[in-house]
Structure formats: structure tokens, C-alpha cells
Image 1 (tube, rainbow, N blue to C red):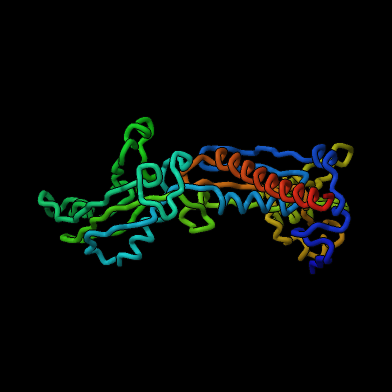
Image 2: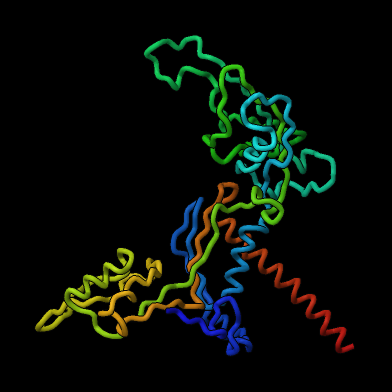
Length: 329
């Protein structure tokens, strides 16, 4: 049984944390980069509380702008997919474009500064060169509508502005629809700037989550066959069995890498381990993971989330300073 007392709920400040000290925070706070690549990033946030970690997560998901397909003007769609379903699928295709190069459209008329235009014109036909014995997948031409079929149509000065990095979809092989001979899809797609709070298609991350650092405390030595059994209760790599130095060289279980633990609590089900181990979380150590959709790199998203958080803090500070000045006047 796991009992969480009211003053130990991790998403709230405990009474002891009501007095916050900047010098102490500066001394203990740190961010450790664990793994980084253009599409994914893993890092640790140490020395802060869940509200700060959750603020970063929410900013990543809902408040960093991207460009996405907002309006689909369908000229003809004879596929089995309804127009509204097809439009929804198209809207979820991530686009490789820097949103900072565009303005917010709002209710304004579309221009080359706030709108990107794609054209989709594809028709399925039978392959006249196909004959019996050839691969079945070559029987039809354009039977699969892919994200690569979206063709960017530069507007105004966009061709010059994006000459070095033409606007395109992040992935070329996203399946949008399947067609049969004679079916076609013809339409014009308008992309606008937005944030995930308005619609999930604008979210720049596929995943952005955190978990607290697992803490495995072995209170009494677990040796011999019990050590092997104890290791099997955890994800591989969490517990290792080593031989102690000395005359008897006893085989003993010890924690190798607690961050790999999924906290299944399997060890607590066995009587031989009761009282010998405690499984906990460190409420001030967060393991963060970011996976980008490809519109921007994961490190760029991380830096933008920090910038957004700083701006939010500045807004709050300005409001508090104003209230203080009004109270003193």
C-alpha cells in the first residue's frame, strides 16, 4: 500500500517550501543534458519543484508557435475519404519552416507574410505498361497520396526569402489517402501560424514529458540467490549483482542505474525483500524527454520554452511591482 500524505503531494508546495530563497535556489538548481539529437532531447532538471517542470512541459506542448495547414480549398475529391476528414489529415502533417519568418494572420487577408500555399493535384490511373507477373504495387500510378505530393507554391517574395531552405513537409512518406483508377484529389492548402493551445496540429512536439528521478534505497544487504531474484524484479540495468571484496566474496545486490527504473514495485510483492528496500521518487529531480515533430530541432524547442518561461515571469514581476507601487502610494 502506498500512502501519500497531504503535505507530500508532489504537484504542490509543502509548508516547508513556502519561504523561497534565491541564493539557495541558484546554488542547487542545474540542468544536465543527457542525450541530444535534432529530433529528440533528454535532460535532467535538478533543484526545482513540479510547478516549474510542468510549466516547461505545458509551454513545449501548447505555447511555441509553428506553421500548419489551416484552410483546405477542395476543388475535387473523388476518393472514399470525406472532405472534412481529408482536411483534418492534411492539417496534421508537420511542415519544415521557421515560424518566426511569418506574422500572425488572425482575421487579416492572406499575404506572403502570413500565409503559405501548397497545391495538391493527384489522379490515380492504371499503369499501361504493367503486365501479368510484374509486382502488384506497380499496377497503378499515384494510388498512394503521400505528404511529398504537396507542392509548395511561393507567394510574393517567398521564393527569394526561402531560396536556401525551400518550404516543405518534414516527412515525405506520410500516407494521406489511397486512390483507385479514376479517383483524384485537387485542392489548395493555406498554412497559418498558430500554437498548440488553439489546435494540436500546431504543437511542435510529438511528446514532451517528465518523471521524477527514482530512488531505490537498499536498507539491508541482499545476497546470494535473493540478489539474483531482486535484480530480476527491476528493468534490466537497474540492479547489478557484484562480488564483494574479502575472504568470502559474497554476491550482493546494489543499485547500478536508478534512472532506468520504471517503478513497477515488483520487489515489494516478495516477502523476502520486505523491510530491506524502499522505493521512492526525488521530488526535486526531473527526467525530461522532448521529441520534436521536425518543424524545429529539439534543442531549439528547449531554448524557446526557457525564453517563454522567462517572459511569463517578467509579466508576473511587472504586475507585482505595479501592485506594490499602488499600495505604497
